[in-house]
Amino acid sequence: MLRKFIQENCILKGGFSLSAGGESDIYFDMKRALLDSDFINALISEYRYRLCPYKDATTAIGGCGMGAALLVPLLLLGGKYEHAPLNGMIVRDPKRYGTKNIIEGRLPGQQRISVVDDVLTTGNSINIACSAFKDAGYMIKDVFVLINRANNETINSIYQKYKVPITSLFHASEFEPTKERND
Image (cartoon, rainbow, N blue to C red; front, side, top):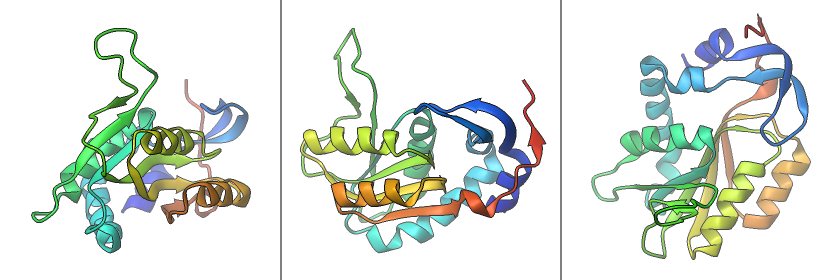
């Protein structure tokens, strides 16, 4: 169901500017999926399955950017275990008002975080999140992304820097762009 939904609704072709810079002829618009209740329910089931090896070690889910801001609350709903409830955190640009936090949902130290994002391309969002969490004293346990469109150099760089497994539901090469950009 997840693959079919992404293939039919989320892959666009045309000229796109990517958030980390650069251009692409293919764009994975995962917000379409993350705002669909059927996709969300299927994703939660899949995440529970994939989280099992880490469930005893993970105490929080966090990330950086819009993809993570949508994904973290959804996975919190589906990833909660009775013996180990999960908490969420989002890394953002520092606020210029109020608390001026970089990490929203700041929790006591020693949290073991699964860092998540919708699409991994350059690793920029993952690196920002992992760096902020490490600087705050948290331990990164794994990285989980919906779509991996990164090259091996990016994957190896993230692994070498944080020494954590990187899991993706799908690789970009598993999909064919079928819809023209429709602005």
